[in-house]
Length: 116
Image (cartoon, rainbow, N blue to C red; front, side):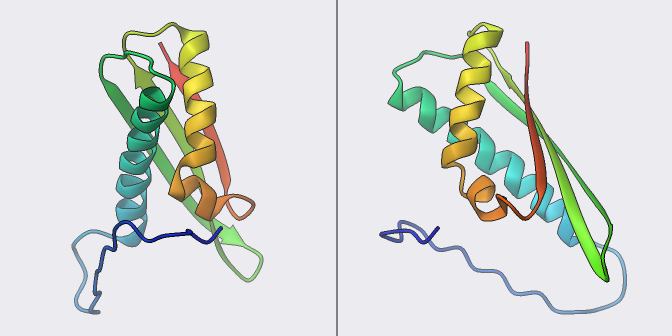
């Protein structure tokens, strides 16, 4: 899904080196959790729903897939100030607008769940 207009561009450079440091899966996990949380907040503003805090936990697993490797994602969103049904509706809509969800849709198994 190509954006109709670029609103922001991030840049990163990776240089190989001796072990240690953060691995790509950890960075992807942190990025997806942050992006999904922002998407929930975006959806609540669109729908004019007052919420408390939003916390998104992400687990990203990596394992063999064919001749390479694949990823699997589980997202758990805690949205204070709303009931469970409202929270589930918000995360379903956030999953439709989140850039990470859109980038991975059909390529990675992603499960989403509301807690609380």
